[in-house]
Length: 456
Image 1 (cartoon, one colour):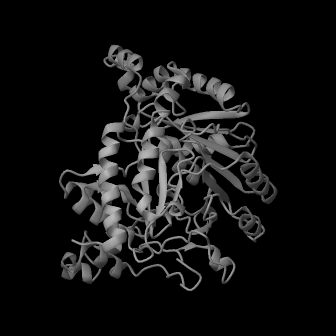
Image 2 (image 1 turned 180 degrees about the vertical axis):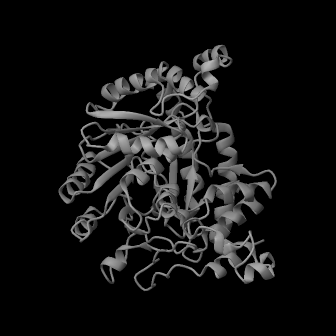
């Protein structure tokens, strides 16, 4: 299994941000590097578990613990980077995290108070409608009409936006279909394709200055036979923090519509806009929009997201419902109630908190300054900065490990998102005072990295 990169489509054309070369699923890192074929399972297991993990029975392919009995589809899916980071943090002391995409605030106090009053109601412990609580869906439809100008969409509530994306992949794609992403991409979306057998992942480049998708490349790719089944973007971006302007997203949409491809837009960070920029959504029969309560309302652990899908798409809801019923049945009932009560606080409650993140962003941009001004991008939206490491630091995970162990600060390696040699820095998870402390550690570490290298 491997991802297909622009170089595989157009020989010799190197992307501005090349996809990563990372087992178990690999992409070409430059036009001079050939993509690897699907890894040998035996070699992969030895890599992951070490040679001591083998038993005589396993070497013969027998026994209940045999590697041969594991699904190749799962084995060849990338290991989740956040699990790796959590393991790293457990092995270190006094580490401040600028890694995970979280916010520092809790859900609205008024909403939490209402939850306390219903927690013992019998209905909270029972199954609910697969689509979501009727009153929550009604409130979401009103929100979509009022805030997002989406008037022809239906809603399904999910256990977070990640589960929403998996629902869509299972509903819209068959194993072996080709799909399109742009590097740097959201790592969990990439994994969703891998684990569902959608192995022909066409990874396009983004402009090295703006981090906007290469739409000219997409236009050529969508003329292929067979046409890619689905194109997906996150706007504003994770991990890039870049914001795709409306004319560009509308062009992407037009290209998808003409080619007969689905366009899935992840709007998780719809409220996280800065410097006067305003979020928008687009709507058509081929467009599906995803949303989340996790970041906006500080509901990461409550796991509530939702899909806004075209009401006029024949059969869409019936097939989506099959997937929903077999994965969560329904999102957590108590979480859905909290989502409903949080909506009552309104977008102003969110924006009041988001505006304070501007200071965090400024502090971390300064902390990244040892890398050079031109090497720090993003921050237009979402909660991320995307920074290029020195040219001699292509092993970004080793840099991440070194920063955590020696300088007490954690970030995300860019290779997890198809950007080897980069790091993602989150400015949403800490209050300003703690952000300044973490930023000083990061600045000190990067200055040492640039000047002296990774001295242990």
